[in-house]
Image (cartoon, rainbow, N blue to C red):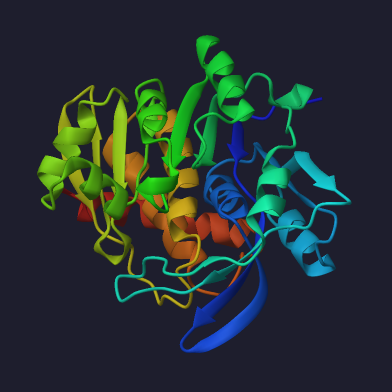
Length: 307
C-alpha cells in the first residue's frame, strides 16, 4: 500500500450546464472531481475523498476513473440519490444556477461520514472544497495538520445568509492556504481593489492567499516574502467555465506544497483551470496533457506581475 501524497475532498454532483444557450445534461461535477483533476495534472499521487449515490451512470464512473486518481476514499450509498444542479453563468462567468435536488436529500447525503482510508493518513497536503466548516473531514484534516500535513481550503460561499461565516473565518485562520473566489473575497473585505482585498485576507492567518477572479486571473500572496502577484488567466478557448476555480485550487495546492512560492503555485492553478475549461466535463488524464501543462509554466510565471 502506497500513501497518497495529496488528498482532495469535495462533492460529487451531476450538473445540467447551460452552455452557449443550450442545456447539456448529466455532466459529472460538484467541485471534487474538478479539484482532483487540477491536482492530478501535477502529481501522480492523488487520492479523492467524496460521497455519492450509487446511481451514477457508467459515463460518470468512467469520468472519475479517467482522472487516474486513487478512489479509495469515494463512498456510494444505494438509498440516497446523487445531488443534481443547474449550472448557468452571468457575464463574469460566475454561477447563477442552483440545486435541483431536495435540500433534505442533500443534507442526508452530507451527513454520511467519509473516513480517510489508511493510505490517506500521511499526505503532504489535503485540499478541502467545502461550505461547511463543521464537517467531520475538517476535523480529520486538522488532525493531519498537527502531524505536518499542509491544509489548503477553497471556502464555498453561495450565500452568506446560509453560511456559518464566523466558523469559516476560524477555520481560515488555521489552514496554510486559502483560495476564495472574487465575490467572496471582495464582499468579506468590503472592497473592490485587489491589492486591498489581498491585504485584508492576509491578516486572517494563512501563509498563502489566492483570490480567484475568473477571466481576470487571480491574485496571490505569501507571508514569507510579503509580496502580492497578479497571475493572468492562461489564454485558452473557454467552452465551459464549470469547475475552473476548483481545478485552480487543486493545482494551487500541489504547486504551493512543491515549491513554497506563491507566484509559481498560482501559475499551477491557472494552468489547471485553463486545461479544464476547453470542453464540457472532465478531460481524460494523459501524459500528453501533463506535458502540455508543464510546457506552460515558464511563460505563465513570466506573465505574472507584482500587484
